[in-house]
Amino acid sequence: MIKWAASQYLYLLFSLPLLILGIFVAYAMKKRSFRALADAHLVPQLADTLNAKLWWIKSALLTMGLMFLILGLARPKWGEKLQIYKGRGIDIVLCLDASKSMNSQDIKPSRLGWAKMQASSLLDNLSTNQVAITAFAGDCYVMCPLTSDVEAAKLFLDIIEPNNIPKPGTNIQRAVEVSGALFNPKQGTSKALILVTDGDNLEGDPMAAVKQAAELGIRLYIIGIGTLQGSTIPETDSRGNLVSYKKDSEDKIVVSRLAERLLLVMAKATDGRYYRAEGFNVNNLVFELEGLKKRELDGGEYVDYVERYQYFLVISFIFIFLGLFISDRRGEWFPTVGMSRFKLFLIFFTFCILHSSSANAEVGSNMRAGNKALNKGNIDQALEKYQEALVREPDNEKIHYNIGRALYKLQKYPEAISEFQLGLLTKDKIFQAKSFYNIGNCQFKENKLDEAINSYVSSLLLNPNDIKAKQNLEFCLKQKEQQQSQSDSTKQDQNHPKQDQQQKQQQNQDQKQQQAQQPKPQPQKGQMNKDEADRIMQALQNKEKENMKKQKEQPAQPEKVDKDW
Image (cartoon, rainbow, N blue to C red; front, side):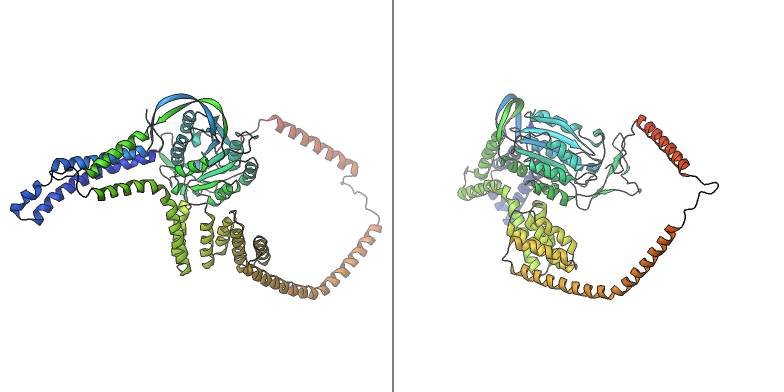
């Protein structure tokens, strides 16, 4: 049985029929061009220079080379081998969100379906590490403890479904706590928790669990699934047919959105990374995990499959090499323009090698275009470019900072503050100071002087040389002094009414003293005395104890979850 470590490349095979069709069209157009460019009596002589058989062989070689290149990129593996692993690696827990909101289809085929495919592809690249799998909704459950048998762990992905999770809802706190408990607390490094969720947290405090995870040396690598616009949650019958869409207690259709801000803060709090499903690439996450400090793993048996991609790439190289250098002219196996084709061949493979770095180049290009548009006053265009860059690197603090600058110019101060706050997640103190400075500017625009003063102070503590922050702080302090002086004058005007109130209070106290000297009235007929009241209170307490005893004897009712998605 063939396993594919990067199965997403197999979709490129669907382009081969179009390529073959294009070859037929090119051959027909080539023959037609002879008739258009020459007289009728010269056409046979021109056509005779074209070796049709070699032309078809050349085209077939290039097509086969492309096919084997695609198969090689998909990294085929076959040949089971039971091995005893001894080496270095890290402990990885893969935690999947299995709540009902993961059935939303804003990510195809669905959020959970996409998560399973990416999880399977990821596990194929983690065979030298120990992995565990957990799934959560209203609570978190261990599917597979830490093991070096990655293929066995993959079997548990199929049973992760919302209907198989006992408690509905979404509790990210429990997901982090239960998953984190699988790690050895005595190890301070080499621990990674991969959390795949839409972040639509409905109960619990995720940051409390994240703080504890950070103290234990666990890094969170979070993949946010869904869109910021959100999607409805389909409800199906036992056959998978759509019945309705999920509704809340007020009979309104629920729209589940990607809670990206929470997930980003969680990842940064543990010195991890955040990825958005829209621009996610498994190889980028694998590269990050490979950079973690490894430890000596205990020996264990596991089933491994031998990588065979090398054979496919060698065959691809041979086919493409022959296809580029074989001539389709009669009497010529190798054309005189071979050097130019050789250069083309080198360019082709250089492109394949450098393709992995194109994503970073695209982010930089979008950032520069956004900054240029922002400086020219084209704010909408700048935001568009920043959002395109954010798809590639959603945890890039500089992108969020620039989005905050654009929102500030649009006078959307609360939204700008949210983006500048994400800029504080960086380790660069100067950049943190800039973020605090801009947060203070937004707060001043909203007439929040105290908050603005605190932000400017925080900025100056990080960068005492920031002259603009000093000037803004001094201005805010003067504004606050003026407000305090105005409030003091208002208080003085209110002193006279207070003196009148004190006189009235003195008169009321005199009246109370006179009433206290009067004899207490005796209970009249029909009224209870103190002993009777005590007996009644004692009887009520006994009755209450009996009711409490009955409630304890009754079995506890199952917890009802209001928000079960």
